[in-house]
Length: 328
Ligand code: NAX
Image (tube, rainbow, N blue to C red; front, side, top):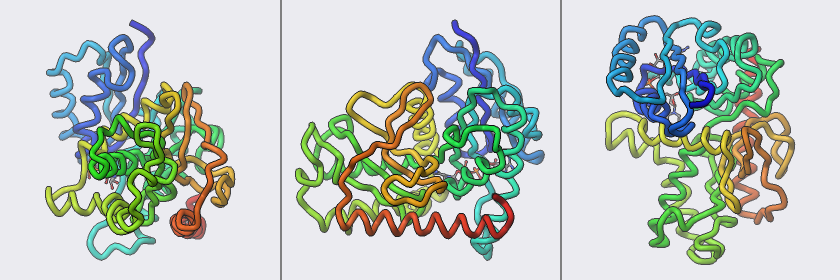
């Protein structure tokens, strides 16, 4: 067995946590030879429930689970973390304005960004799942100036996986026949699932499908509104699929995207593809050993341009809102 990896998870007693922790503890992220030390952060009232989750983790007797530490103090839980998965966030309650939501989450992600900056391991990578994920990542990143901005990302892998599944169904192929799917922009209703560069068995997916109406009226709304459809059907928001996407995203980030393929990840923009610099925007990226690079040189057609501009305009508005709240 190799040196244990410290994985911090926030919102650990929540729905996503309940799927995610068992995947990580069983070796789905680092394999059967790497022990994992889980460090779980919750708000004080949720610590009792978290104790119950810890009992269940113990009862699984996972050989790869080295230890579990729980608590409600970010600086204690993030101490030495090599990977921090920030899942816990304040959901929008009835009557809450968007600015109230940004402010409530701002308080969480400023504090967690500062704590990570103080105590996380030198090689820490931080993945934000809690919504509004892109802007929460921007807030955490801005409050941890000693951590390189490239170490932060927000989750758009669930949207990516949803788009893969829809395309596979339409083309009557397996998801494993599809490569180079892209989600651009914000993890929100404005996100843009782009299949103009995707490939099915090595052929251009948009050409194979040859149905622009399906792209505009079916694929894009189905993927961007999938979260709402799941809430309606299940009575609560997507959890297992979000946990699975969180594992996929972290695994690819740390271990690399497959040769010839890429992943969608919201990362800090360097201005590529006309996205304003500094926004945390979903891009097609390739990764190797914890580093990512935005895929360059893709031709952007007029339709894609409009879609990318709309979703990045929303990100820019969110940035303005959190700037005026003094959060970044
Ligand atoms: P739950 O409400 O089940 O769990 C959230 C947990 O976070 C709760 O246990 C709560 O006590 C905890 N929490 C709140 N504030 C905290 C803080 N300051 N420190 C530590 N823990 C804190 O939500 P769940 O279904 O697990 O979803 C978690 C987040 O993921 C939500 O913001 C949700 O909107 C977001 N999602 C993001 C997705 C994505 O693709 N980026 C998809 C799924 C999900 O909707």
